[in-house]
Amino acid sequence: MKDEQITDSVLLRALDTAIREAFSEMLPGVPLELQHDAQPSHTIGDAAIVALSGQLCGSLIVLTPRASTVLLARRIAGDLVDDDDGEMAENGLLTQLEQDSIRELSNRVGCIFAGAVTSVGRRLDPTFPIFVCGQDINIVAESDHELAVTVLLDSVIRIDTRAFLSVPKSGSSREERIRELERLREELLAGESE
Image 1 (cartoon, rainbow, N blue to C red):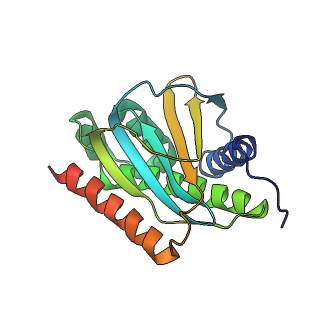
Image 2: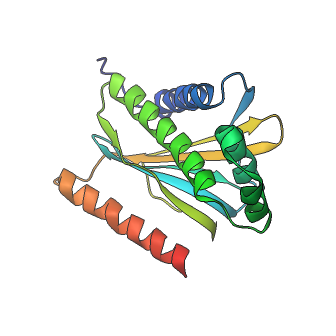
């Protein structure tokens, strides 16, 4: 394990690697384009949020407008989506399979990203993502490192990926950081059910 200085450039390289590897695992052969520092094109959509803890802590958020969520989930799930599922998606609802597809893609990006950051000398542990459907998502985070990568697939599907990482506060324990992430999770899930 190297012990590189953690800079935005090192973290962005790790996030790029994670995105490319996760997409090549789940959608082999599909060309994708990565754009840096692009602003999200939407606020109402779907988000999968991976909490990150360890020597750095924060979150990785995969944000998609609803049309991209459905198209991406169908590309991932392939033949598992049947006609009834299609009707549900057109009515504005996501099937469990579609939610799970996006959640798993986010999980893969989060795990590969954590491994890449750990390989440069900072332990990072991801949690399984939560999925927030159709919320007016406003991302506000105080962090030491803020990363932004937009993924375009076939110029039709857009996925905005954001990572917010900070060095934990002096004296905070891993358990306190996990409790804070759980509080954030509860707030997001409470907002979804309203």
